[in-house]
Length: 280
Image (spheres, rainbow, N blue to C red):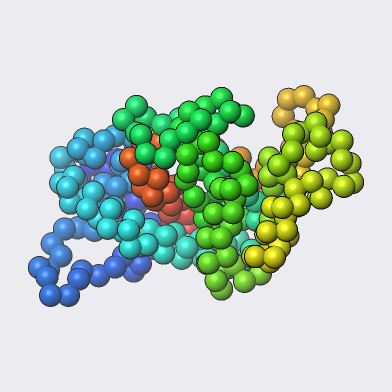
């Protein structure tokens, strides 16, 4: 009997996810581990921010738990579960599965001391670490995320993550408009503001690529030049709110993962828990 950790899924929440869990591979030993306990052990790591080896003893052994995390990261299971729950969450909000608009933004986060793969310096944010290039729908639900070194420019990371969004196929069949900030224009904020009504042309290479390659229309929303303090920006405010949701998960407060693929999986797992809690 495991303890009632705050990170655990309830029975109702787990019943949403259980049909989406891949069955045991044929020809091998029957699956003996309790998958509810495995999921709760993974969520314990994501929510509490501990090391894999520090998973409590009343949960399955950490090598077993980590093996499931790694295998499902590599075969796309986490993304598949996430996408199914996202469709259900949109339906629960009286939205069709495919959004018509989305928001592209990036978040630079510090990496832990032992992380050395795909690490760079973001001069704009004065931060050494990694950058989470994220596309969310207008509800704030993640469509796709790509983790790179923090030194990767917004436009380069934006191309990577938008390409992954387009590869989602039918689930984004209605998506046509992507809202972004001025960082995707390729010019300085002062010069960008000075362009006035011609501001859309300033980011022409990125805009042209998105239209010609992916058939997405890019709209840039700028912060008023003379504004101070918090300003609610049309559409763009949704992405920072999603980044705020990430702060509920201690494993996401920094980037502790050796591989960027693990960082992306952690974000999908966090969103899986958030959506399961909403739906149940």
